[in-house]
Image (cartoon, rainbow, N blue to C red; front, side, top):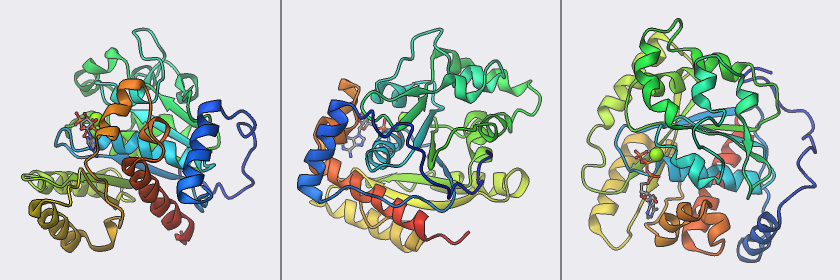
Length: 302
Ligand code: ATP
Ligand code: MG
């Protein structure tokens, strides 16, 4: 099945009976706090890249926690770690030591995407293609490769496993890895940190998205903006949030992510904040953001 193919057939039940104890405990804790955890399936498979060339704005945290939230809610999710730092792989608790089949092997055409997918221990419906140290040289190696901008797209088009959502976690640059991600997806999710300088560099990101759209992927669309590390006590956070909402309008999710110690602690335990502390404000906010994304996906007519 290729990306964008209609996936509105019955949900396969291949994973549905093998939830881990942690996933079950998390579900129970969330259901106590937030009511029953169900989210609608999208009308079509949705493929996102999570991009912002500014470092440390919450790309990986957003990829991991939105992915886990959707998976706990019953949807089938694939996370592709396209950052040599491998933080998404670590946070999802999957193997990424040297020699592990990874996104690098997929990009150079050694293996298929399916051969690199690992199941996240805490969320059985979530698959992850990890990044290993090999990816550090890929940006340079890709330059001399045939079809260098479309390699990831080709690899994803060949996935024949059922997924409702695919998220690609991009590195903090606008190089060939990020271009590969933008060519492979339909939607860009931009996390914006509610702090000074947050909007600096955003123009460059938008310009690059326009270039990819014009030359390589006419379907590319900035569909979703998420405000991260929001501290409601500061005027600055409010100012950044209003400016982003004024500029991007309804693309900005109503839910914003607060600055939260629990969110930053969770990756150290190889976990999402949803499994690490399901009742925390950070977990609830990512759950709200995921629900908004899922609701929009269910309403989309195309
Ligand atoms: P990079 O550009 O290096 O890939 P990134 O954009 O992926 O970074 P993250 O790694 O998600 O950003 O987050 C940067 C740091 O901030 C991490 O240590 C993370 O744990 C922390 N962090 C992310 N979101 C929050 C939050 N809402 N509250 C507190 N800390 C957070
Ligand atoms: Mg990151």
